[in-house]
Length: 99
Figure (cartoon, one colour):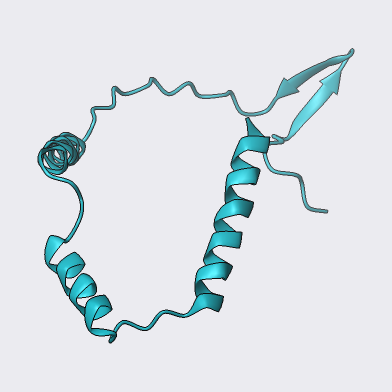
């Protein structure tokens, strides 16, 4: 027979269980945070500050798209636009229902 995990063999005498092996108590050791966490947090703060200085927009890409629209080279797919609008509406409704 296989004993379940955590059960130690023992004997029962008069309603008391006496274990054959005494339980050992191991003292806890202090745990220190790794230095990498501090570096990552500092890097995140610097990234947030850098992003706050200017908007997260690739202005060169925006100019390329504007030029392509003016020249008629930018593909506008009405079905894709409609699908994305409907998907955004569903996400918006789900987020507001969760509140």
